Length: 257
Image 1 (cartoon, rainbow, N blue to C red):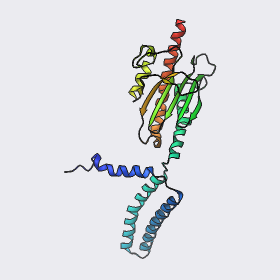
Image 2 (cartoon, one colour):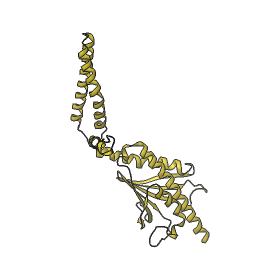
Image 3 (cartoon, rainbow, N blue to C red):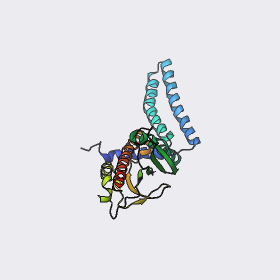
Image 4 (tube, rainbow, N blue to C red):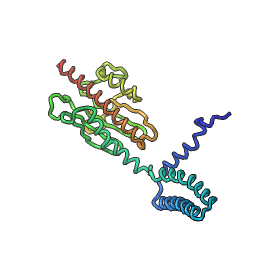
């Protein structure tokens, strides 16, 4: 007895959906689809009304059968095809995450906007750089936290600049120079991030060296609001942990001085 619910049996429909999602039809093609959809729908309804007026049960049964099959299929196909998944739309969704979603969620999670602000310094394509700094508040961070996000459709790279006095040598994995950052690193790894074993050059305009984290995202990440919101909120907690680690490191350095 075959198992009709096995992954193999679902593969063709899954591939068909992915193919439909990848379509970016011109206006004339979408117009033809609308005409076909309206013709099938209106034709079926007209046949139902004609059968009811003439008490022709066979015509009514045929029309209802046509609508039962054609209407759901047409709605699914048109919904998938008209939800344009072209490069421009994906780029627009990427910019929306970088320009709006990330700053708003990080601001809400990291701290009170009256004492702490996040500023997007630049955005080039799929990379954006940010600075977290205090609003002239003595309770705010001693040093601004600079970080960048590179959102490449289904992969993300995060860079967090390090204070100038931190100079880890060799492998970054459990490096003693990063003792204050271990809690943040462990939390990021639990969420699927990987720590690059070497320092990276910070992607912003301020220069310096940075911790580089990277992870894969769901293939349809940009098309799923729940995934984007979860990622942005999780990034907010990540940024807060890094900011706290930086504050601890700066405080210890000031105490030694």
